[in-house]
Image 1 (cartoon, rainbow over the protein chains, first blue to last red):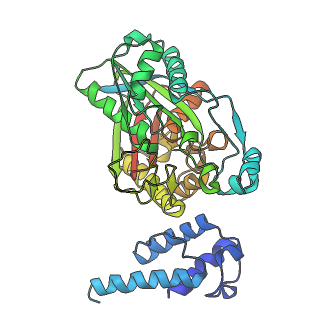
Image 2 (cartoon, rainbow over the protein chains, first blue to last red):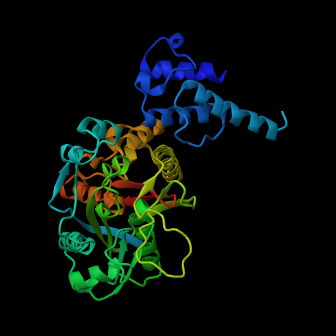
Image 3 (cartoon, chains in turn orange, brown):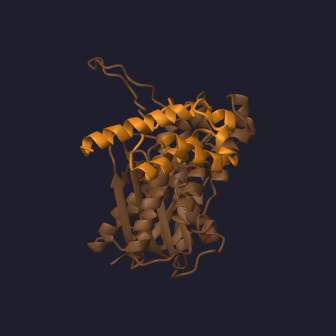
Length: 81
Length: 317
């Protein structure tokens, strides 16, 4: 779910086929700089209702997926669902 | 009773530092800086002090308002880069322009000018002052690690000032302070104590760029929408939104998220870089002197910075 959403958002941003975006895709390799990543994170925060701290560890699509999934698990655990 | 802005002034040091010159000092390029920050050149002090540039901006504001220095009842300076820990920059300005009144500083980093306007509004509300001078002045070049390419390309030096007179032009304001020094800090310590056991940090400005970007965009979006909603304003009611000039991409993303027309946002970062508390009064002075403001215009000022502190206000020109 998270991966698919990131794929969609990223494909729209860089205007490519979403199938070309893989978990190991590095943001810098597809012309996405650190501020673009931050914008992507802000859109994902709105989408999933979580807050994500920014640090240098978000290099690949998989890094971002993992960060959001951890936040979602914590959120679901807190709400008991 | 609050105030209206009777005149503005600004001053930037003569030395222009271009991106190409910076690229000779650190590993960067005009293309990188332009694309990431939106700055083409900035001004840096060579012999001027923060007090010098603050006084020149203040003198220009006095002249623009037709106010004599001895008419001032209050001077508030917003700065994080005063020349001295004491006396305050406000006191230096007072002597420099030949005024004789209460003077002090407000420290709220890049949001300092709006905090200072709000403090001044309190003095007007209590009827304690009739005419006030508010100055935002910064010599950021002395707080920067000039070997750190991630921060030295962003900032610049400059000063902006406004003369306030009793009136009803300060309509609304909003302030938010998160607290803490984890995202932005400038340790800037001076001196040592033989008793202090803790290692002192590097004195220079530190910023978590991505966290700052997110905070800044969210600050503009929430503050501007709060001010517009509370005062029943649509885009066509507002003449200008003057955001703190920190990074053109912050302004662009905030503008898109707010769904407001880009031309509503005044941006001059390409010429000055981020001048902290001076950026908004410099921009206001440019708009004023280029004849783009008419009495009755509604203007929103929106700032964000270290603290983390963000603020916005609605003024009627």
